Length: 206
Image (cartoon, rainbow, N blue to C red):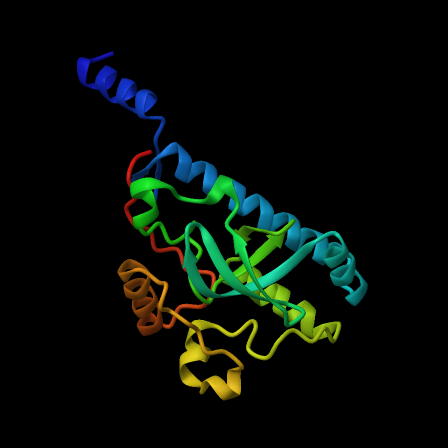
């Protein structure tokens, strides 16, 4: 093995970093991505295995809900509107919560931002649904006539096209960081849906 190869291998092992979309990410970010994905896949799989009104209610009895983030309140907490119309302030699960410098970065696939639809498991925001998952869950909720709050599954484009009165949403971004606001504006202009797209951003190695 050449000295260059040895150096590259040792650097990767020492840093514990992986690559995502050609960009290096730290171990904490990779762990967050895995936990986020597992939580959402478990929710969707359970719902699709028995797509009924009763299944949604059974999951609620198990303290598993969907929530739409309406405000980032800081200190790892978000304010959500739950599928039953109630509002709550909940912490982001420790396994997917960014800390230190990473908390100010913008790895969109992991960060939970205003207007994301998240799985609330045991009182924690445990995972953020992708746009594809939101579409599938929205279809099932509609087919079984489960009445989520008006505008609950709206995409970013739908939210900006309609008035707050029509969608039922008027998001409070006073707690959002400059990075979050810039990302939301970029997503709005690109017509992206809630849950984020595939675009990747740099994140500090952790």
